[in-house]
Length: 319
Image 1 (cartoon, rainbow, N blue to C red):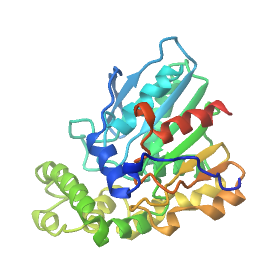
Image 2: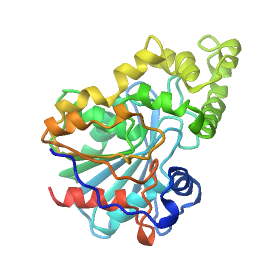
Image 3: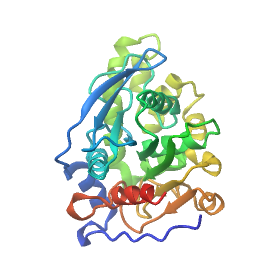
């Protein structure tokens, strides 16, 4: 598809990337949504916690919501989407990735940007309910990469999956990591790394044979974390092997269902390689929108409905 011309216009005070990103992540709140938690067991003995919210009428449509790095299903960028879709007749299930629901997961491994086996387990579970004949997936940041990788990997996906929406998508994980490690993003990188290392502490005592205190203390950057833990725990050679194999960019040409990517041009987390213009022009199923503003998941809108949330709803309604 040709590149989509964006109509997004932020409030005058939210044009700067830092302002829109921080406001949306730390200040925004969403009220009026009730979530019900369900725990599902995974084939490898671990678990995922799913937070459900429902439309007033019993619908046959569902949206699966996937959060970003060190997020969870209670983040406003998730609950905001869930509430809007519920208000328009679509049930929502917000996935907490392994270890992100407030309770450590059981295994040494956890979650990562390419762990599509966990999304597949959620979809298979949802389909056992025999209630939904139209299922949509919306991922944010890490969750967006995961969702787009899932539908582009080449395996058969259930016919009920009708569309995917990716917001602030780090299509090239190495490029995005390089941006996060740049001086302009130092405060974000420090925050992410602190959260990741805090969670890793419990695994030190749980799995001393797999992670030593010396290895833990050697983690100084996000790349170090992926070298010492992410790659080791999930079967990759090193951080760069993980980035290469898990980036959704290589899978975008193979997507066969309607998919929308919204990446703002002033997203400081994204490298130039995270804007898949060539893939969007060559794949009729891939729609790419690049607003001038919005930062990282910071598409502030009127009445606390974010532009990306309304666009996602409009996108599925046009199918």
